Length: 75
Image (cartoon, rainbow, N blue to C red; front, side, top):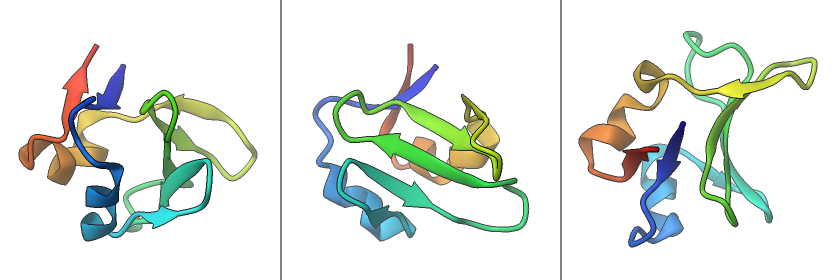
């Protein structure tokens, strides 16, 4: 599972195109992502949400920019 590291301010996500929607940050991204990427503010878990509410783990390719910036850890 991928999640945002504990020491990282979630406001940093806005620099990568994420929108603050209250309980989570969402990234609608590019055409390579079916649905959108969601990051829960409380758990910091990174999920991919499909159009029909199917939730699954985001893969490393989908959040590569965040990984390269040192914001993500794999648990």
